[in-house]
Amino acid sequence: MSNVGIVIVSHSPLVAEGAADMVRQMVGDDVPLAWCGGNPDGGLGTSVEAIIAAIDRAWSENGVAILVDLGGAETNSEMAVEMLDPARAGKVVVCNAPVVEGAVMAATEASGGASLAEVQATAEELSPA
Amino acid sequence: MITSAQLKALIEALSATVAAHAAELTDLDSAIGDGDHGANMKRGFDAVAGEADAISAKPEAEALKAIGTKLVMTVGGASGPLYGTLFLTLGKELTVSPDDYPAALRRAVDAVAARGKSAYGQKTMLDVLYPVAEAVEANKSKAEIVAVAHDAVAATRDRKAIRGRASFLGDRSIGHIDPGARSSALLVEAVAGVL
Image 1: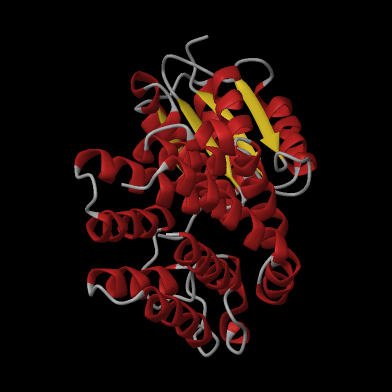
Image 2: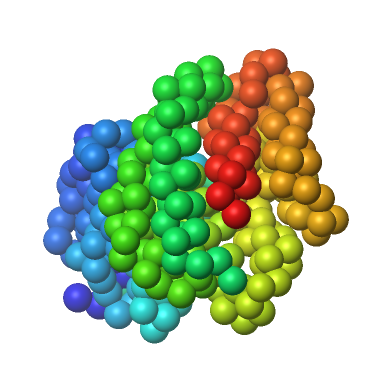
């Protein structure tokens, strides 16, 4: 699929899955989508390994936009991006946006064939400058 | 150059101090954060200890990178990438300039600051790591370096958190020791006890 992919990373798998459900309701299967949540033991937190796997599931040659909830999700997502193959790392961005609204807005933009930069900008309009 | 035996002792000392203080770190984190710092650190350093033989068989720089990667993959909170970056950068720097420990430590702490988009004085682990890096550069004794670390932890009590979950509390973060600063000092003390 050529549309930009969306990855949702939350400390809670329930939040991540719920946000993904809301994205699917909006864009169906037009956008590659993956989510992850929880630390490596399954408690609240995030896992670099799970984030890397989610990026792989949502992979698009036009790039992947990651939406995160709180600090650790952002730091772990940035770390995950750096650990990707360099050819892929340049096509993945972590958006500065609220996770639920950002994911829905970004996916809606992506479903129309927008570029990664356009998808990120749309999500980030939700955050105060 | 740190020997294989020292590396193994180092891994054991780091994981032992984290395990012994996990409940304390969690209590500190419960006061001003999300209360998972002790459990996260223990998961990470237990995972490192589980591979102590394989890691300590590697050359010093590669062993440090392996510790960093393990922490990144297993901690599950922001402290994973932060401490992971510390060890990964130490390994990278010692590959380029073997035996220049003060310079490697300084660059590693700078890398942690970049990873966390933070700086000294924001009530984080950097409030300990920067004074320790300075003490190492000044060629202070191990006892002095450990004292610097513990004094630096105490100094976080009166600071307001600017980064991390504690920053959500604003002024209410004042009056509590920062859990990341405390875990940093524990790691510094463990290292000083071995090397």
